Image 1 (cartoon, rainbow, N blue to C red):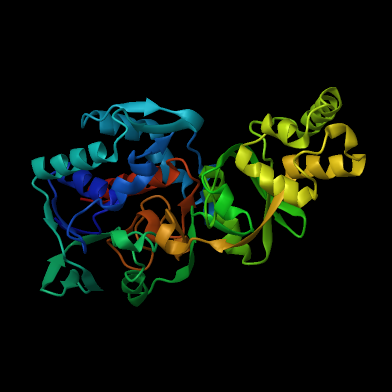
Image 2 (image 1 turned 90 degrees about the horizontal axis):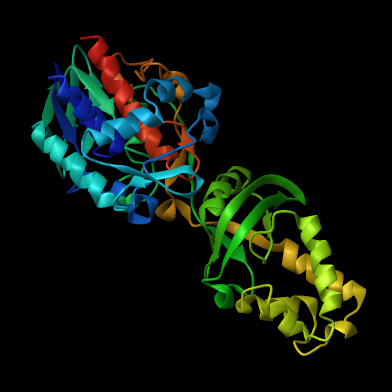
Length: 403
């Protein structure tokens, strides 16, 4: 049995390894001059390859498409699979699981060693231009054509095109009869409209952030929020970015400027109490104990108050304005940082055209579609890599079960 794996990302590589372990002849086609290029950038270079809380609820897809695949090859299965290759896990905050070295190149180099041990042929700088099916598959590159019994299509989406996932390969599946759901970037930073971004760049706040449309909350997340010179970043922002693309309307984010507020109402009462207790303080001195000093200039301008104003001279109406700024600051969202900076692609090949148990195409027999190329995307925190590895393994085992 001769099997082509189109794409040398996590899904394609793990599928090739599983097939080769079971004595199948596999060739990986990769358009770049190296494989697993995108994997090196995951988890800020540390490779957050799964999450302790993986469930189908962490994914955006039609008809709960991911459930069977995630049950067939679970988080624990992936951890054990990697352990057998020598990769030990470490658990960090919010359930994120990394290699114990905290380096993505540990995972990349281990997978490369496994490919080498199994003598899997990897054709680099070999972009697949077309796939045709008669009795067998004809896979054509610029240099030559190859013949295969089965094909696993694992080219990724459109995110981070510098890694090779530029979205051009969707056309190959479309030419085979598949349909593509419109794509847009997710897990990316948000661009904001604000006069204060330059001065706030580098400031971090830990807390809740809400995405609002016409004053209505459409999503809410919690975690580390980081201001930049273009807007805002951080895991909660990356998760919210999907809604920004879906809505494509004027939106706002609302967030506190004070860290780790668990109960806004309770904290507001506390601030009232402190305000009167410290009435001999200047406004600036009071703010210095509450927020990063880089926020103070913004707060003063937005409240139209002076730094040296004593608290006991501030009117109740101005205090209310101050508390709203401290606890519920709003910023207008003007867009995202796009595919170039996104970690995952929303949209892709319609899952209704793929068998949810085997990942075989419902249109072309012996063609399997895995990973990001289909209309599945997960939350930030290791969920997308889990999907890549799970789908790759399930497709490989589906092939093996039919041989």
